[in-house]
Length: 193
Ligand SMILES: [Zn+2]
Ligand SMILES: [Zn+2]
Image (cartoon, rainbow, N blue to C red):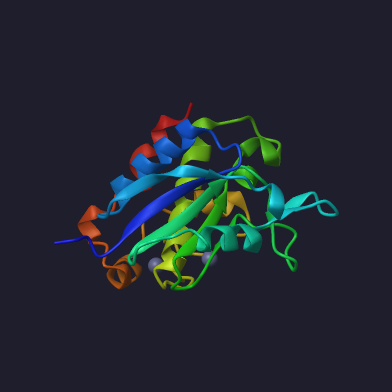
């Protein structure tokens, strides 16, 4: 039987291919659904806004939406550039609610962006949770009140650190992700560089 849904990660900009591969493995460990990396690469240059020196995330979403895709494939673009929407100073990512496309950026998740030392393990966990959050929106999930749930909203990277790389049981039920397939982020907290 064909899997009811699967995830395609699309590299946008100069995000390191190894980072995308690690993200794919992490995401596949959390979801009971296939995750793969698209062969093509998206140049974010057309979404650049010279006055803000940032990239318009909705323009990147439109680029991903123009890609041919099969039903049941959710596309998450992953980038290293600073994203914005007109009413926000910046966004970590965004997604269509119940739609097939989302985008997430590592740019604001880097610890050095907040003046802290660089930490590859911390960035890896933050990116996984951010991608899981945007994927959740594409699967139709809205923000969740459970503070540890991946669908809890985050304004700061430090708030992402308080969440698990997992949906709570109510959110998981909605997506069809079996509870026993969810791997808690707590088991990774000791892996910091
Ligand atoms: Zn959200
Ligand atoms: Zn939840």
